[in-house]
Length: 140
Image 1: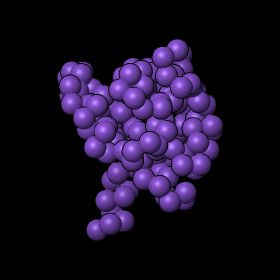
Image 2 (image 1 turned 135 degrees about the vertical axis):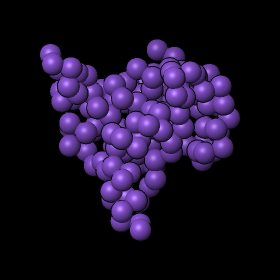
Image 3 (image 1 turned 180 degrees about the vertical axis):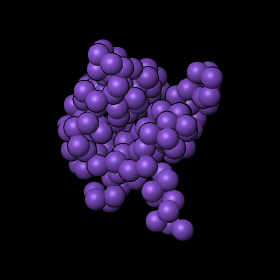
Image 4 (image 1 turned 90 degrees about the horizontal axis):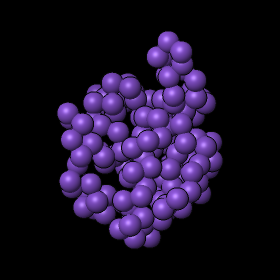
């Protein structure tokens, strides 16, 4: 393993509550349509930096955008849909000098036998999350 380690969604929540920065590396479309972690109750904001752009093209500006978005010296907790892209992001961040963790199961988790993502992951483990549409309505 070339990053600091894997965390269950619950352990990731605690690590963020203890001061780590949650970095959601899914696409903008995923944030908009599926939802995002809601860390308001622990008074921190997640950071959103796409690992892949539309069309599954790797974001060549990922490390620069990450460095600009996260506090210096913070531990980083990477989250994606199922825990795959976040491993790649954690490896790249570690190589760039960050302390990086991966959230096992991701935001939505693995698909069940019908292809629905209802088995595990941040949402299915009942950790706080919200849709951006809900947030936009509240802010309007």
